[in-house]
Length: 297
Image (tube, rainbow, N blue to C red; front, side, top):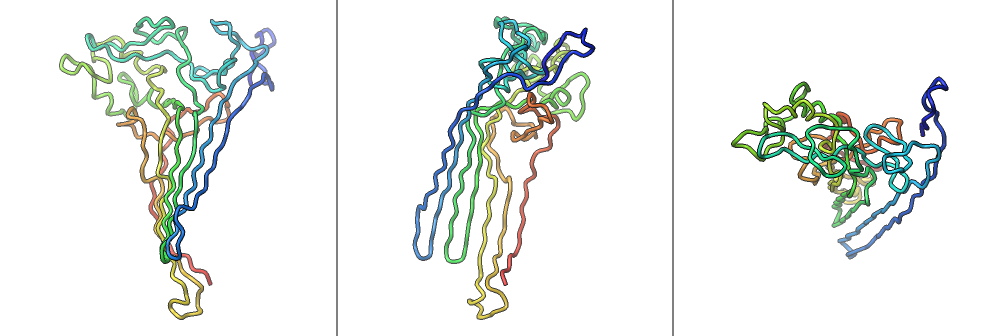
């Protein structure tokens, strides 16, 4: 990590293997054969992993207003006693239905109309509470069907691109969310009133850009049929399998993702271990359907 140094040295930080942290958790895997007959078989695989990360010490690190040692970026901090990937920013409250102003909260839960960096607090963790997968395989009289889902729960995702796409005074690739602005007849709005002074700070980084990263995804579905060469009374091939396969066909996400095309399954951290769970115009994973033929000679 980059440890701050007095600038009289000619530079203001040095990279060190500094501090201690602890990872604790448990992984569970369950394999079952649910049904097995001469013609039909159904197998299930389920796995889930729980992880608890805690920073134990950060010697020589800066101390925050609560006296806790930390290192970090403008959006994330590793704070002693917490996870290494805590999001640290001003909390967004919403649009005031009475006047159309955007509102945030200070450290003492008082309403403010600006994004003051001094009012930042811990608002989320990039590390999930648990992750896992669930697959079922069916075989019947030459047909095979495999359905695989994976899931993540309890993590936060920061969408940095929203500071541009949902910026009412100077962004690009504008989101439809901005069309839902406050008026006398639309008090439950997403963006501030056109005449509100808070439009100038609405796009600044805050928990407004922090979304629930939990999801359940239908990762892979494949359906195939295996034709044995003996069934056709030929020795040209042993068997041939025709199949069709779909990937990323369906994803269940938190409601706050509606109207946004981003993908909750991202890891745009670059080379910085204090930028986990952050995305900046990361393209969503493609939905794909493929068909093919495998021949064994």
